[in-house]
Amino acid sequence: MKLTKTIGIQFPIIQAPMAGGATTPELVAAVSNAGGLGSLGAGYMTPADIQQAIRRIRELTNKPFAVNLFIPQKYHVTSDQIQKACHDINECCLELNIKVEPVIEPYTPSFEEQINILIEEKIPVFSYTFGTLDPIWIAKFKKNHTILIGTATTLAEAQLLEESGIDAIVAQGSEAGGHRGTFLGKVEDALIKLSSLVPQLVAQIKTPIIAAGGIMNGRGIVAALELGASSVQMGTAFLSCFEAGIPSVYKQTLLAQRQDNTVLTRAFSGKWARGIRNKFIECMDNKKIAILDYPVQNALTNAMRKKAKERNDINFMSLWAGQSVSLCRNLPANKLMNTLVKEAGLIY
Ligand SMILES: Cc1cc2nc3c(=O)[nH]c(=O)nc-3n(C[C@H](O)[C@H](O)[C@H](O)COP(=O)(O)O)c2cc1C
Image (cartoon, rainbow, N blue to C red; front, side, top):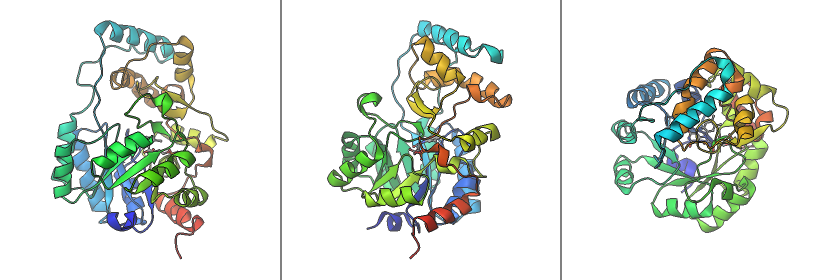
């Protein structure tokens, strides 16, 4: 069965989940109402906030939507390493006049509590990244008829996800904005361009493949579908929409890009992610600092990112964006959806 039919959407366009506030209920609902699949990036949200956002989405649309979480990972850091990391981060954001200090665990909301809300709310689609989902959870979602979507950056990851019996797999190319979903081996060895990754997966995986990374317009959608993808997932293209919940200086920076000025960095979160180069990334790069694992580094840079937001200072914000950022358009999400559908010739 076609993936659009399985999910119950009109067009093979998924607005990527983007944790950190970008994917407001208004953005998610606007995309779903326009015939795509809106996704709430809930990775950093508390269970109560997730529930509230789901209920708000349901007030705004009766169409399918997705919620996305991060599969938790093991990390190991010592208190000495934390002290050293705080010192290094402080050195790189002196001009903000803040003091970065050790943060007390837990560094992330409880995954179990987050996921229990999704099960309680019987959400239509659950997508996730950074790993595979435990069979116990898969069984619970299946009982609710929730469609499950995992994320792969290599064939080996896609094979593992397929074995877990899920409904679709996002193929995240190296062009993609935000965090790398890699969970097997080194991220450096899993930087495969979308045009190489999608055909490999389509040839060897029976589960429908969703192409993600650098897709910004109708041409990109057509190309991905031609490579064998069943749908596309677009993040950066929706970040510059009116409804996206990011600081306006971040949106303006996206819209001002005339070329690819993105880099992969661990500086902000401890996990490799693609974003627009800025002062903080450069400082951390130049110092060749030993950056802590996710989510510890993420917790330590939180105060800095908060202050940067208050001061509208893009030098210390994480400006996640994909390599095709220069093609961003500033439109309401339903207009972007209509434009994409027309450009890609999806209405016959
Ligand atoms: C700001 C931002 C935040 C993101 N957060 C998430 C997330 O929470 N969960 C997830 O699965 N993917 C996340 N991604 C990655 C997207 O799912 C997708 O792979 C990526 O946006 C595709 O590349 P593009 O941005 O060039 O379209 C994020 C991407 C961006 C740009």
